[in-house]
Structure formats: C-alpha cells, structure tokens
Image 1: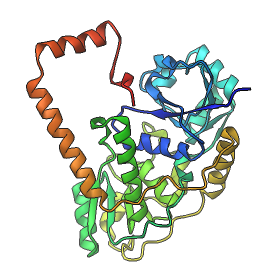
Image 2 (image 1 turned 135 degrees about the vertical axis):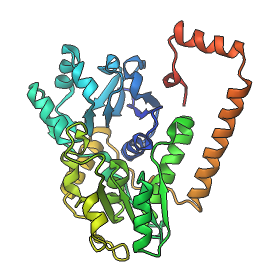
Image 3 (image 1 turned 180 degrees about the vertical axis):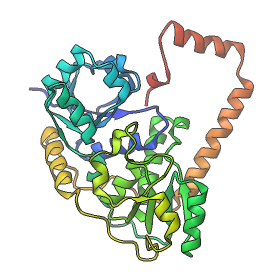
Length: 342
C-alpha cells in the first residue's frame, strides 16, 4: 500500500481568516503534498487520493461542488453559505451523505443538513485547536480587528494602553506564500495582545486558543441575531458578547486594564476536534505553527505598501498585448486568479 498524500486548502478571497483556518489544519498534516483551491475544488486532479481536512466556508461558486473524487475528505468545521444551499444538488447531497457525517462549524449549517436528512453534528471551528507558542509574550497593546474608528476612540478614552487596529480583509494583494505569512502575523498579534476587541470569528476564536482575553462586540450594524449571518450560531456561546449600545453607554462594562478571562465552554468541543483530525491523518504536530515576530506591524505595512506600489505600476504600464493575453486566459483557457500556482 502506498504512503498517503496530504493536502491543505488555499484561497484567493480577501479574508485572511480563510488562511488561518488552513494553518489550523496544518497541525494535523505530517507534510503538505498538495495545495487545493477551495473555489475550484472540483478541478483538482491527482493519481493518488489526497487526505484533506475540509474546514472552510463553502462556497462562493456552488457549481464547483461537490469536490473532486481524487480527494479523501474529512468533512469537519464546514459552513455552507446561503448560495450553496440555494444550489444544493442531488449529487452534492449524496456526496455529503457518503463522506459524512458532516462536522459543522455552526449549528445553523447542522440544522440545515438535518432538514435534508444528511447526518451532521456541531464540530465548532478548527481554529480553536491552534497551539500556543510559549515564546510569545503578552504585550501592552489592545488590538481591535475591523472595528470602526468611533469604537477605537472610545477604547482610548478608557485606557492609556496603545490601541492598534488591523483588518482581516487584506489577502487579495498576495500570493499564497505571502497569504500564509500574513496569517501568521495576524496570529502573532492575537497571541501577544493584552486583549482583542472584534466581532470577527477568526480573530476571536484563535484568541480563545491563545488565552488572550476577547471582547466580542456586537455592533448595531450587524447584530448577532441577524439571520443573514448564521456563521455565529453555536460559536457565539463560547464568548460573553457585549452589545454596542451597552458598551458605549457603560464605561465599566469591560475592564481594559484587567480584562476578564475567556469562558471555557469551547474546551470539550476543541478536544473532540483534535481527536477526529489526528485520527484522520494519523498525526498531531507536537510543535506550534505560530511564529514569533520582531515587529509584525512594520513588516505587514511594508508588504502592503510594496504590493500597492506594484499594482499601481502595473496598472500604469499595462499594454494592449497584456490585456489580450488576460482576455484569452479567461475566455478560452477558462483561467482565473484561482488557478495561480502557490
């Protein structure tokens, strides 16, 4: 019997949280033989089946489901986007049944699959399994992730600590090597922060894994009970969310000097995730994949500035020949940025 091959999902979407999910899956891979693009999962070809942990939000283009039969999948930590549900086919339903039961990242996905008589359970998100790095020390700064300026300003009124804001929406500029590096910078920031203020799942859940205090802030523009955003169902129970109106009206609702410890309601689900993933691949890396950076803020800014400079130059100098080549790749070869090599 030949030795197993292992694959991990790659992305070209804008959200760095996608790549953080892949880094979480890498803990359970003895090596990476293939990088498999989530948004073209049906096109993957291999002479040998490739074991792949299928933790992701599925998917922007449901015509590319179900996945290639060359993939040996572990269906776990999966979220089915509304567009996928609207295009659920008999073929995809049969795939989920044959390779299930389906581990669902959120209870909404689980309930949807149950309504179709597809075996499913709530697995939670694989990012809660990311290992801490004992060399990363807790620092003085408060990190806000995709928080509006008025929230940042309010936090600054309540503490003398530095308040830094970063966005998870930055990855479209980078190739896959760079995306993973940016994702590791983000993980370092969540790991080393005094506390994290966010509503982004893939900032909040890794912070749970690192024991970094999290203020899950329920912004009035996107309340957690919004049925258009079901990704939080089940996961929000791992936090003690605070509504924006309560945060703005009560300066004592969260102590930024001595932030409360996170709840431990995720521990049992995390441990079950570790068990299922390690049994599937036969591996659990004893080392952490979270790197220690000297100054990730400066490095990230430099990367973004350089990429923007290159994009501006390319936009200025692009000629008719390049435009024709791009049109040919799209119209004739059916190539997209999803088809770029890592």
